[in-house]
Length: 203
Image (cartoon, rainbow, N blue to C red):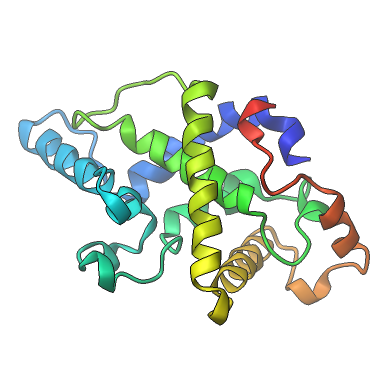
């Protein structure tokens, strides 16, 4: 179960999440002043602490340049799907997801991406200790943002569509087929799995 493997996941996500962030946000490891300056400005923009822009890194790249009120497709950045596909979802967790990903799964991926981006705050990679106390607060914030996203878009059912899409992609990536291939007991297993508000970082 996801929450019972928290210690292992923290280590695995920290190591492998760095590769995802470096690749999908186009961060350069060069030592030149220009490369560092470019990295620093990019990360500062993605992590700026100003209202809705605080989670700019969760939007598709083409949406990041738009005005906040015009931005669409939050949680659609490919780094999120990549992290879920490769490092969170797999045969060992299949029976716990039902027909959509738990909010805690998306929040965990978002927390990992934010942590890894912060390691580039000064324009170069800085190996930072992943502390449960600090990142649990960030995880809770992402979970609250997902709750808010669901409430604000409930009329169009956008959260469920997003969660189902992420799960469908993860299943295909793992070679498990479409959601229609789920066993009849999958729904019951989903209900028995971790609560959506449970924090996998603490286990």
